Length: 232
Image 1 (tube, one colour):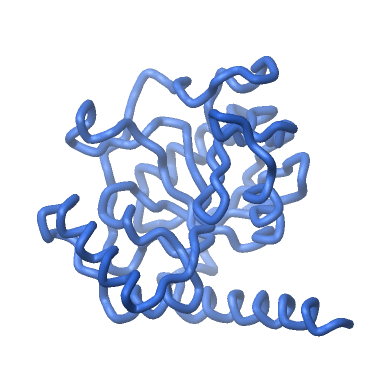
Image 2: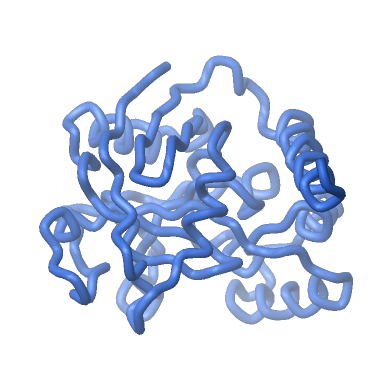
């Protein structure tokens, strides 16, 4: 084993340990969904602390809504996004992301315990100018990759949050430590509902977030959710 491979495996083990220690309570009883993708499997545990989003996601999975949809928006060191129903039969080069179902979901912000650390699953939504209540999309979701932040970067992120949330969101010492050591996307905290986390398959998320994309952030080569099933 070379040094680079060994370091990568060690980092993966430390990340798993961190999730085990700092995930919200009750993880052993959570519902779990398996996304079988063209790049590999991603297993997601859904938070009981966000029941509206949990139940909505489970209902869509039970009804095979996500089967054959694309991860249509991929931004390196940020996130991968899927769930647009129009992506099932999308043509190459077609802009995606506008498709949805005819309802939205009331936000369920659960700060400071649940936030945008690496590996969480959150609901996409329309921007504040047309969605001031910050209601979630019925079906589009994203998985956070993000990046790690220096102390100076965290201070800048807090200033950004102050501006966006009118000082409503204050990063805790635990959040700051997570964003410094593990990574994530702190600028989204308290504005988009986080409702689950990846418990297996972060290597798959990593591969997908490195895909080459077009001008619409859509992967050049389709990354498809082949099947989504409730496994627990």
